[in-house]
Image (cartoon, rainbow, N blue to C red):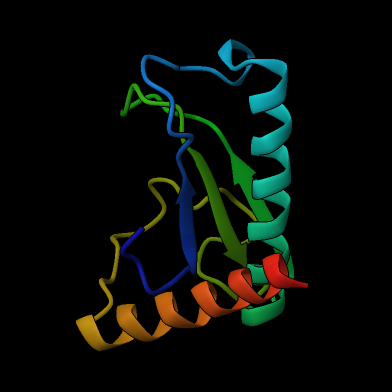
Length: 113
């Protein structure tokens, strides 16, 4: 998500016509949990999170997706949810590229280990 107040990623299973986690096969549910855990642990490590918020809300977008949001006790919304709290402050293109590269490297390194 393009809001520099909160490092935020969406994990989207590459499955068509799936709205809910329970609609995935058992194998795909396990894969989603594994990938979600890896992503959240790397985000927590990189961004030194006080807490990771993970949610599959999907009220606005019908495709299953899981939000992974880094939270800090000092962020604007703490301890409330980030949704609807304040207007997003977009990253610039350089920031997005740097963050994506850092996260991609951490994930790739974890998968190689």
